[in-house]
Image (cartoon, rainbow, N blue to C red; front, side, top):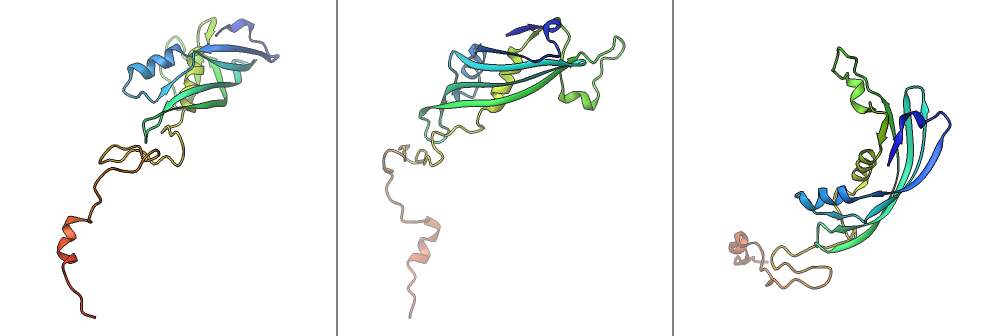
Length: 176
């Protein structure tokens, strides 16, 4: 979604649109982490307005994603809904200085007449993703020995007789 900077007024405006997730899918398919698969688009509701030099954006996105459980490696679907806010301000650099101050590091900037919201919304979606995707909070995962999915079946590993370093102590007899 692109907006012309001159069309953003002090009076709030709202818009609803579908944001493509093609780039997000590319990030996860080509990267080392393949934890998520995104639907073709996310539904976005956005309110935007200007306050002096700053442009304020407040919105919500919704969609159903596919995740890969980090414990049992099964695919599962989950809803992702998040409210977000961000502020854009005019480019801070003067023609002489190209240095950001510490206070400027947390802000987002625009310099063009046209504002592309796609990278900013993508950032908000990435921030909303769970750190460790789980199909269920009680997921038992895979057995490290035989690889059985402990949610669906019992472990096939032979039962252990305990720690082999303690075998000597199991042979001791105690008088009572």
